Image 1 (cartoon, rainbow, N blue to C red):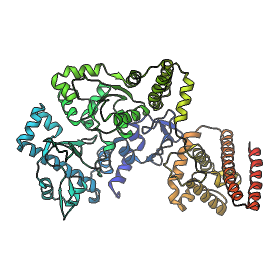
Image 2 (cartoon, helix red, strand yellow; image 1 turned 45 degrees about the horizontal axis):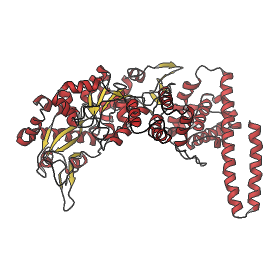
Image 3 (cartoon, one colour; image 1 turned 90 degrees about the horizontal axis):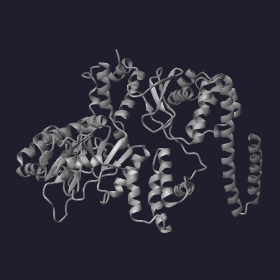
Image 4 (cartoon, rainbow, N blue to C red; image 1 turned 90 degrees about the vertical axis):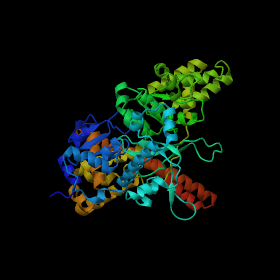
Length: 590
């Protein structure tokens, strides 16, 4: 009998079949490879092992089993991924361990009941009903978006949820209450506000936005209150309305991003169902990736002259880096937002969508409107405004196009502008000391080369003596690779050979590393002849040894400087002698 539903699902489902529904997998030896769905790349570095039932991307470092893949690609927590895969595998979860009904599940239940309570309160409050009536929101739309009302009572929702069996701590952890500053107890977070539930991509309520029903002339309270960061709600990963808009975005080939929740409600009611909202914050990388899953095209309807202009600009830069095609939708000046325009005439908004302008054309137009491209001061002002934006464009062809365009406008060679971009980028300081880096962290060139060389060692254990003779552990980086290699040397010295199965049995904590190195070998070296593999080993060894010697020389130069400052001539001479020996070695390697 199987131990758990998780193991049963893993036995019934093949990782190649599951991932094959999302990716174009191509065979590479005994494994499969694909272009990674979690970061932009042109050369496939995403590997899937049918034998070990694992996946790993050597570009971004992400990896795991079928559960972690579904969690990552669908933006789910484990219990949700478990339900999805259980349904596919026809595994009954009724007999699952009660421990799987975790804190987040309780939190989502509390939020669901909160939404139901808010909806009920809306039906009981005339002022709140009039608010939506004046905004011309229909009963059907209120129901679709589960719009509600939080009365001005201090603990109405808290009492209701306690009555449903939730503890005060669970209500607080869900973001629905606030601890009293004086005394003990809690009071409702949302009071005297119309309520907009925030849902994740799958339609589960994860939080709320509350808008003041009455204006507060003394500005004692903010117009909007949002659920704080919780286990269920991460504002950097949620887009308001996307759960309802995703299919229409896919069908129409573009998402329209507006600023406010009410704009989304009005747009959907008027038939513009590919509209979502940023809720007034800058777009994050995770949000852009979510949108890009349904379409690479994004139309933004923001007031680019408002206080939120910088937040909008930051989000646009993220989208440009991830190679989204962005346009700006401009409404006639008498309308402050899509809600107002649609109330007047939906055709106004439709026309604005049709006339949306490329974001780069918008930025060029904006920069040129306040400066003369024929004057030196104007050239500098235009360049200062546009170069940082052009630098953020992820696609090199598109970036070059706009550099050439800018060069033509201000009559400055493209090479000068490109050089200006490089000079404005902050240099990255490299530390001489190696730091401990996790196996999943992004890697520099020498860490990648170290990984490739160890992959060759793992798959060519018959020739391990060659590595022992010529590869010093200190040549490798980061430290976890050094430690793995040292363990392999210890094993080799004790037994006279490397048997991977026996090595892993004695070092279970290193199994993940060995599995990933085996995958990396298939990714980079599958199909190479023995002589080609030998050439790879020699070339990699030379490069890593040369890098180590250069780093050691730099370190010694610092130590000499310190010795000279302390007037320790004996130590300085000794260090200088070591540098001379290393310099000779560097010549020999070259």
